[in-house]
Length: 204
Image 1 (cartoon, rainbow, N blue to C red):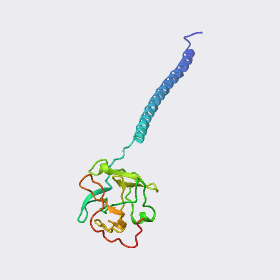
Image 2 (cartoon, rainbow, N blue to C red):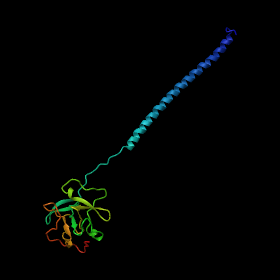
Image 3 (cartoon, rainbow, N blue to C red):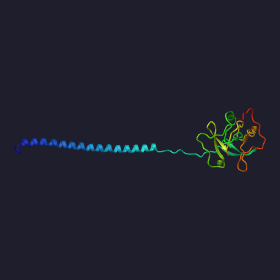
Image 4 (cartoon, rainbow, N blue to C red):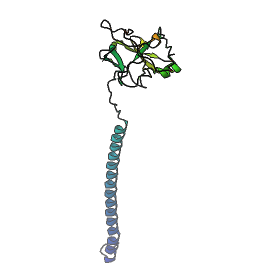
């Protein structure tokens, strides 16, 4: 073959030039693909990191604030009876002599006239305070937890219409306001003359 032939040189140029363009195009496509893959990888990493952070925020445990238990009963001074126990609303609380050995005798109609002092659902007795050591609970037949002072369940009287009333004191000689003695804080019957109970009242 005569390499000096102009026609041969023209043919060689038409073959070489497309190959250069093809390589250039392939190189450009490869670079674009690498850039695209890098961008996708970065977005995926950010998305995973964001998902982890969001998941951690959703599963983080929350701690509900706790409040100290309020005393269901407290001591107050009464002009006729001296130091007595009252409930959280200031009403006098009483003990029933028929409640013995942890057995609650005041149920049904009796409990309507003498509502038991009970803890609300989920509530607990206070662990500190002047009366904390003397307060316990007794399970009632309906499952409610009745507050007890020195082991004796305590009640309100339906005839007491306002804080400070002591109309249940001495009813049938079975009901007594919880009077705090000077020695030991025991419960005793008052020596004062009992106020007349409203009629009719079913004490038990």
